[in-house]
Length: 189
Image (cartoon, rainbow, N blue to C red; front, side, top):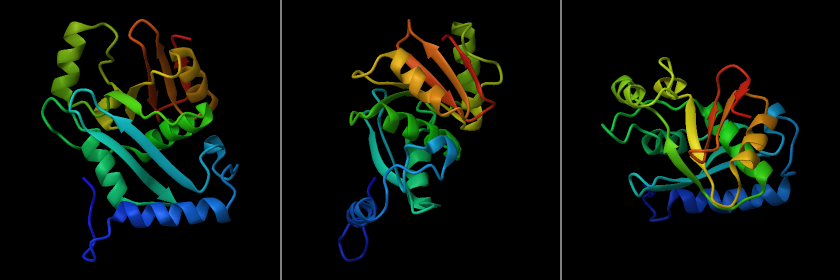
């Protein structure tokens, strides 16, 4: 889903050149963003979905501003794949995932197991598992369940918890970490 400008140059190509320049010109690790101490002046998220076969690799924040087109891509990518419902994903959740990714020092994209869940999907999952919350933040576009093959669930959990910016759940048996932008709390640790 790369947008193309009328000149035939992709938006990602332009952002890539600009981001490379910004990385050289500005310190990459900045404490200016509080919990995003490793996020720097360029924020990038890389994910893929085994359910849809789609992948996402986008810079969504540049020099203090979210990029609306990139957020729209994230919203679509993180949709409820069961019914294609799309909501605005809370950018704070994306920030937590991106900062955690950077803290772990990995280049591998996250595998996204669950982003937005419609109420119908959440109810269906609740009927199958006691681990699904009735008022899940997934239904508000404020949570993501993520996995990496190059890092353990414990490593991912520790990186997300180090952000001290939302909820972090460790699901070792299911091999994923839940990250959300709700109240700061941890479980499964």
